[in-house]
Length: 404
Image (cartoon, rainbow, N blue to C red):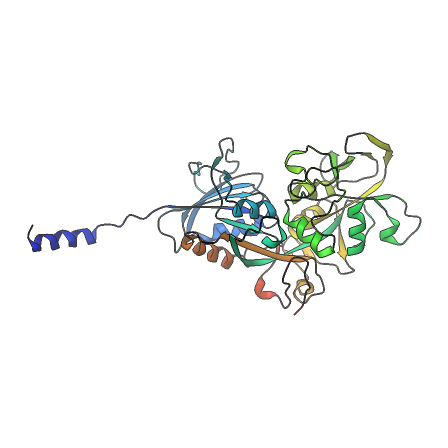
C-alpha cells in the first residue's frame, strides 16, 4: 500500500468517534450519614436518573444512580448498599461481594421508589465505603484501605417519650450500658425508683463504636441492651415489652465482639431506634433473653444514642433529647442550631465521617468520584453534621482528645 493511502486511512481513523467505557462504582457503609452521602452522590451528576428501595430516598438501604458525571468518561452508574460503618470497612477491606440493585433496574425518569430487591446483584464488591469511625477502630484494618475525612457527624443521647431525664454524663452512660440503673442516678432524687434501661445499635454500627469510644465505655465490651415491642402508631405509640436482647437474632445480634451474646445485640438502623424511643413506657413487661417474664409490668425509662438526624426524628415522635455532660446540642430538621458548641470543643459527642477506598487498585475514577462527593457534602449535610472546614478543633482518633 502506498504511503499516501496509509496516511489517508490514518487520518480518517483519527476523526472516528472514540468509544467511551461505561463505569459502575459500588458504595457501602454508614447508615447514620446516608442522607448527606446520598444527596451528595446525586448532586455529583450533571444529569441523573435514580431508583431506590425504601420508604424514602435518603433512608433507603439500596439506591442506584445513572447519568453523566464530570471527569468520568461514558455513562456512570453508582450503586449503594447502606449497611453500617464497621460492616462497610469489613466488606471494603476484604472485598466481599455484597448485594446491590441490578444495573438493569428500571428508572423511568427520576426518583423511582421501591425498586425490587428480589434479585440483588451479589457478584461484585464495593469500591468506596463511608464510615463514622476510623478503620483502626474496627478489627478489619488490614492496611488495604485509605480514606479522607468527609465531614463531622454528631450524636445525641435520647430518652423515650415522657422521660424526666434531662442530662446524662459519660460515667452514667457507662453504668447504664452495663445494666439497669435507678432513675435517681440521673435525677439526684432518691424517690425516683423506677428503672432506666438501655437500648441501641448492633456492633456493626459506627454510631455505637463512636459513642462508646467517646464515653470511655470501649466498643469491644459487653453491654446490656433491650429490644422493644411496640403497639399503636405515633403519636400514641406504646412500648409493651422490653426483652434483654436475645441470641439468634439475625443481623440484629452481635456479630463482631462477644458474638451473639445475650444483651449485646442491637438494632441494625438508627431509624428503628428512633421509632422505639417515640413510645411511652408506663406499663412495660420486662423479659429476659429467653423471653421469660421478669416480674409484673412496670413504668420504666428507655435511653439510647443516635445520630443527630435520627435523633430529630425521635424527638418529633415525642422522645426527649438529653444534654451530654451538661452541654445541650440544639438540632432541628433544618440543621444543628448550636454548631459552635462542636466547632469550639464544648460538645464532644462527635466523630469524623470518613470515605474509604482500596489502595493499590485502579483508582482514577474512584478518586474523581470521591472528590466530587466530598465537595458536595457541606451543601448536603442538613442536620447530620458539620463541614470539616467549619471546625476550630480536631481529634486524632475515635473518642480522642478534642483540642485546637
